[in-house]
Length: 470
Image (cartoon, rainbow, N blue to C red; front, side):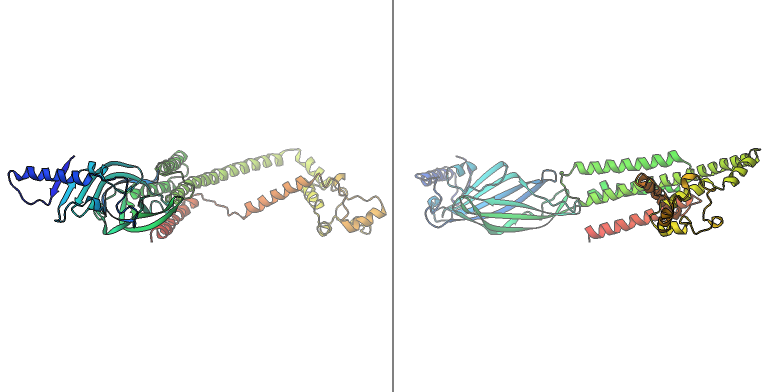
């Protein structure tokens, strides 16, 4: 049996040391004689009062991926066992951890305890102080909605299934002010005791909760500042000549891939949770800005080369028209056109009017020409349009129907519905194209982008930091 320290025997001398050791050995043997380790003190009476206090040695690690943290602490428990009383003179024996295996101790448990060291301090009146030093890994369920601008609460819970009443001592926790963490700051702690109702009964549970604030410095230099610089780097393309395609495209793709790499590195250090975190919002918006800068050059390039292609096509068309106008066969074509009186545009226009479902439109278009209209004043001459587009006049009854419906034969309406939809889409696209302002100088797009992109990014940062920090 290891004897660590012996207090209480004040007589010292050459031969007194051996006598003192012999007396302690006899005292310990005497108090353990007939001692039943299976029975708690005051068995059958009131529940035993067990005091608790903690001393924090260190916070070793906090893992967001596993949702746990590792802590090293000293746990001291205090109770009174009258069976261990040996003197009333105030003597105190400080004994090793193997003595705890020979007396009754509370079955206080924590999750995944390693490297346990024990100490027993036995007073003469039977008061016992049972100290343990251990390193344990405890669960800490984190809410990462505001990550990395978040606050977390990590808890130490102590419980016993025996008939004891645990309580916190007056000075329940020590060492919190001296504990340091690499990524967190300890803002404070809170102790609590409550009763838990389980299937086997009601048991006492003590809890110690630490309030932690994540330090933002690491993330500023590893994530936020690089992302801001990458976004600003994408704006350099607005000052590069629009004809330098390789330079602007290479710069845009490089910034997009860099933002993708930063996002991948951040996600690798976090658990696979379904909700959106604060850092996700920031990285997605930075990715959007660099991708929009790349699309801006796509718009500039399309506008520039599209305008050049249109000018080239128009120049070719003018040259062809000049050749046709100067050719000898031009007079014969002109005479043919004047004889028939119909052109391709007239035929298409008449076809669109015939397809109109509104009789009033057909009437205003001159297609509802009845039998009472003189032949010399008809809206459209029969010579002007081909037979398939001429109004049908076969009988008086059909002429009466023509006066009501517009005078055109409704042939193949169902077959022409897809064509109607296609024509409507074409007309809508033409209207939309006409409503877009025409940009004569593509440098205007770059000039506006030099202002719009930085201002938008500054507004986003202001809203982001005010919402998550203030």
